[in-house]
Length: 117
Image (cartoon, rainbow, N blue to C red; front, side, top):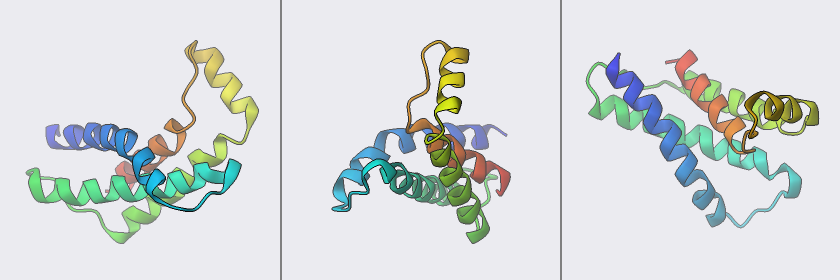
């Protein structure tokens, strides 16, 4: 149980820290839909960290291609939530400080990983 918690925290931290710089290396710009490109990057980062965790951490299985698909689908779904203003207003009212836009695809990718591990 502890290795999975460590892996999930590592996926959240590294996904948050490195998705932006990796996005900066790509010469593509989608304008307001750039969050979807960030979602794909986050899904791949979460999946790759799952592979690395499967090699390094004990009792942690390596993810399959279905896990990558689940990460991708839920990250894109999280990115799609950022296009709905009512969702952002509701969450900012509930959490008092709001939720950063790039947190939606990251949380979606990590949930997709946890669902299909």
